[in-house]
Image (cartoon, rainbow, N blue to C red):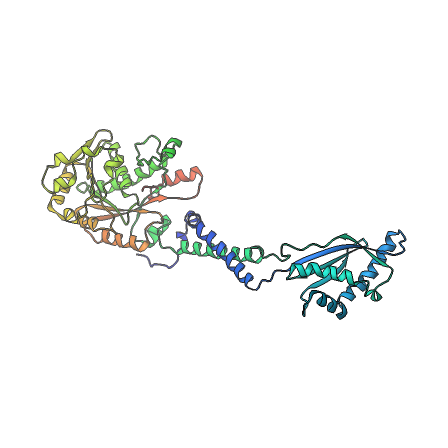
Length: 473
């Protein structure tokens, strides 16, 4: 086995990265919201609402000249003095007296509206009533303090002040809060991407041959189960079988490539024809692969016996739509209640000879190690050209491990980005340490972004072992 690396660039799958981000988009949304709320809460702690009132006055000389330029120049000089007046202690004292306050927290500003002779007084305070009253106090006292102003100035109210109902510095989840939320979301995205990259699952074909002690027997691309609109609406999940008229050519060719490699081993050793297929965990597609390989052999005119030895969760009879009432459970043979001819189910639609289980059994390890199982394999070996055995997942129970020394060849089905690499390696080691020959791994449910059809066909025709990719629940 090649030296293990902490990080392998070839094991990065863009599809897996995108799917991880899509599947965990809710985490990103939550983190963004938490970032916004957190920053909002932080800002709110020191937030003091400010209310602004304003008024606009027309400034003209008492003896108006009706010249716009003259009126504007006059307003400029008046407003300059007016601003200085509001900054004086005498005006501030008068305002505090009128408001009955010892401290004036308001900010007062006088501006000339550009290009006009309009004066705008703006007062901002943490009390909207105070801001409103301050403008009135200023204008009520300007005559008394007129010695500081041009006595000829006349102020005509154009827009009266009103009491502000909303703060002028509203604390909304914007700007800093939104920015903080986006930063938090970006950090979440980076962490998810890093998690996806460093998650030690099998994401690519190259990692199987470079980091695991095995060969890549074949690759099966993801195949959609519900291809018709009617099936999608009815949520009908059909088994992926190469005998189906709507199955893709890529799927069929992938299975055929795997069958050819298995057939090659048998041609080299004609007396060895028993193949066991297993997986690390459930839902990796081993039953689909086992059944389709058996169908591929049968379509070549070979006599095939398919044994569903996954007696804990049998699936073959369901995938072939065989009525449960027609199945004689394999347990009956092991317990001596019937003979092999009674257990054998001949499926005339597919040409397969089937030995099935129809219901789950909680403890089946003893059956796998029994003399009855050894006798069954020996008889099937003599009766058929090929014997395919579907077994339970290796990481969950020891049934498959018990069968390894009783079969000729073993194959491990590995679903893309599903089981952890260390668990896959442990299963491969068990297969390699047995008396059977470990043929390699089938990379199943392999998903990639759309590629050119010619490139896909080149993958299919690659005789080195990189066919297409499969899926199964």
